[in-house]
Length: 379
Image 1 (cartoon, rainbow, N blue to C red):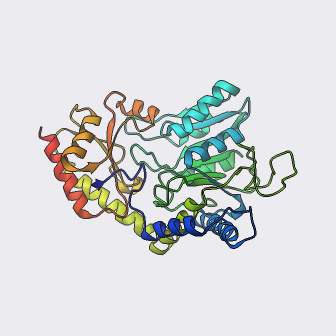
Image 2 (cartoon, one colour):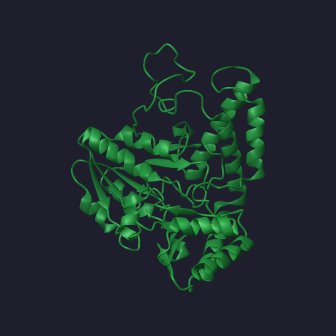
Image 3 (cartoon, rainbow, N blue to C red):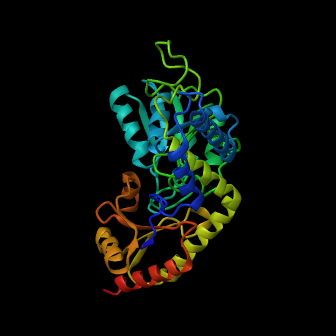
């Protein structure tokens, strides 16, 4: 199989990640629940991984890195934990349902107000619109760092400067960029960074988290055992246990730790360079094929390694099925959990076919995908 659905999850992981998970399964106990070697190894691994993530994203405190199952859980924790009745929040048409559905839920349950930065038919937003939408009760701006549908990168430094100017909380969804694009929490004035471990970070599924700037208060999301302050009736208030109850995914975190080591050794710049090269090669190989429509920027400096397209009026699901059954190429088709952007792109009915590339793809994968598109377009 030629795997070109890396925006959903990276299938091929570094060998060191597999070894780290195997080792953890065989040797690690439960962090903060014992003083024997297996428990202490787990605790050290968890702490060291927090520190690696804080360093990777340039956040000042490792104890403000909180682990979750994925970015969806991280975004739910952030959104529910900072917004109260009467608050107003600004977000964009580029967002995934991991942002939209928690906001719609709070709109219904707590009456929060939501304003959207609208995307045009090319999937672009106007940064001047952010300040136009700010109200006296605006609490936060929530934005993706890159669209999972078009790959368009949002200039979070520009948005972060706006949130800092108006003393707003800035929440960033880094699902598509963590590990695939350099992120500097300090430079971009990010208050809460939500990330997943199984995509660009090349770690196991079931890993993700939040990096939280000191001074940002997020209400507890769940309650239970933490290994500390057992006799308190209330959940401990300090990070990270304020937001972590129960046993963490220790085996997954061990794999994520190894993945970060791989990223640091290889460098994100080198990884991005290869991924963008492959995406550009694919686009250049098919851009002149009759009947193709592309979505999002074609300047690959402005996007992550995603190429999204449709062929004529063919149903995107049928195109993806043909790619799989006839050419053994894995892609993603349909609505991509980004309903507002599909509305802006006029692809609600047809959906779109997404090709997404990763460091472990190679040029032969691209050449086969180019031939496949040309064949399907000739039907």
